[in-house]
Amino acid sequence: MNTTPDEANLALWLDDELEGAELAALEAWALSQPDHLAAREETRCWRLLIAGAIPHSEEPPFPDFFNSRIAQGIRDQMPTPVVHEKKAAFWKSWLMPMAACAGMVFAFWIGTMSETQSLAGRTAEIEIPVIPKAIPVQIVYTPESGVNAELFASDATSPMVIVLSGIAAIPDAMDFSATTYIPREREFDSTAGNGPLPTEETH
Amino acid sequence: MNNPSGEPSKITQGPDGSIVMDVSSSDYEDDFRLVALAQKGDMRAYDELVTRHRGKIFAMIRNMIHQEADAWDISQDVFIKAWHALPRFEAKARFSTWLYRIAHNAVYDWTRKRKIESVGELNDEIFERERIDSASLTTPSGGEMPDQSMVQGELRNKIQAALNKLSPEHREVVVLKDVQGLSYKEIAEAMSSTLGTVMSRLYYARQKLQTLLKDEYHSR
Image (cartoon, rainbow over all chains, first blue to last red; front, side, top):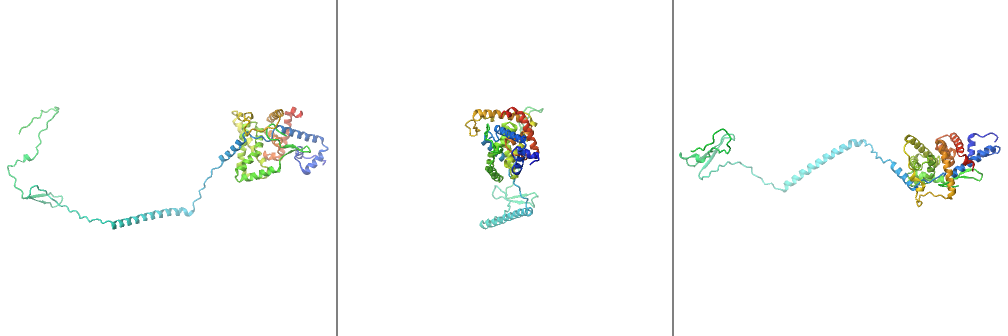
């Protein structure tokens, strides 16, 4: 290989990344290139120096905790499963209301049937006594025996006349005031008022 | 090759001197198997995936934003987002590359949000390693000698300080290439960019870093 290799291959060669035929060709070329050989050697030394001073791998502090934090972080960021409700089928849109209505009708029918049956059963079991219809009877109470009383009234709105037979005639000398209450003048405790004090009347 | 803290680097030097990523094919197969289970809602499989990749994602984000507490939170967000995006994941790319892409977006979102808010200082104290109980099961293990660890720690601080001076795009390309060991193609996928752009950014980023770390770089 007499021609100078391209820069990309040269850079790969300097860093020991070339392989196979390309490496062989470049090695043959480099035999007559002491500067490039020295550059490669310098690169190798440099890499050894850096690699020797700085670790390529370094365990993080608290590695177990490190891992558990990652696991926790993954769990925290897991999307909560979303339940996608399936779109209701077409038949459901009309069948479900109809089924509900039919159910209500059926329940109502069952209710009425059970009510009828229970009433029929009850009447069969219990004999209800026939109560005679109440007839209003007008009775006039008379404390004396031998006195008969009769009521006369054409209708409910007309005045009623009671005829008593068998009762003795009332004498003319009878004082009715004894049988009635005559209120007297009230006594006033209060002295208020302009009028004279009430005086007791004598009869 | 060990790092001051964390897992040994998977970037190794081959017998011919080449730098290679040490990733076995069984890793990919296991990833794909677990991804397939997780895509069906298996949380245990996903938890296993988190355990397998949390270190790389956390390290990448931490190297990008240099705030441990925020890196901790952002890393979790990355895995939560990845879970929700898992049904869309196709096995065209590696799972880790796909995660880097989510992490890239998360970091840029955080940066934008941070610029908008620009208020308050976050308290990183709760995550400082010195405060972690040494008897805790979650204590990061370190298999290095104290002096070596200290030297590496100093170097790391210097490199990270230098990284901080780069633009976010240049910093990310260095982190993904030189720290995480991704290929150009994978970086282009992760950053939603073209191969040429990645190559260009990496070239200039390395140039600037090497200038910033001149003393360290030439002493080795």
